[in-house]
Length: 215
Image 1 (cartoon, rainbow, N blue to C red):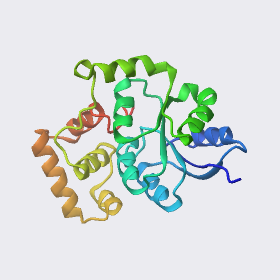
Image 2: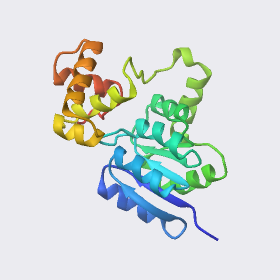
Image 3: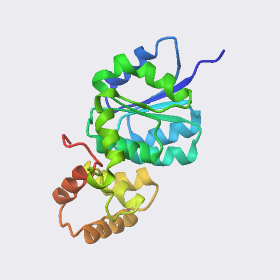
């Protein structure tokens, strides 16, 4: 009997190694990636049964990567494994189409349980935030939200890359467009958001969950 195929995504190599050890002999590890753009590509190539994804991924954050994956690899189950305990992140994850959400501090105790649950078609929510998340769904008008703002998907991608400090040339190569296209997107982002510097763009990206506060 074939083992479930798992793809891991986290920007820290040590975390990936630790997660790989948790896979043990129960699952087949089909990939370990450290940024969201590679995650989307590898997910399409290997078509895993389950993806275990961090939210704070460089180049393309885990939430925006998941938005692409649910369209291109719809049968795959996505579990977010993150340090973000804010239930607003969990709500966003489930609205995108995730099947599980748990915190890194409880990964050793909960990850296998979460994988088994989503493989059975169930939803897994870590008990650490389950109560708060249910209250959000019961009372959406009172809940915090990760407002995606007025930007398009491509503008959000460019904004994250700008906030991470990538050059125009690097961004053009990553997105397979010209430098002029990147400059156009950046100018449009600044006009739409009424922001006037890279520092202001970075603060906006942080406040909207595109990059973690520590960057």
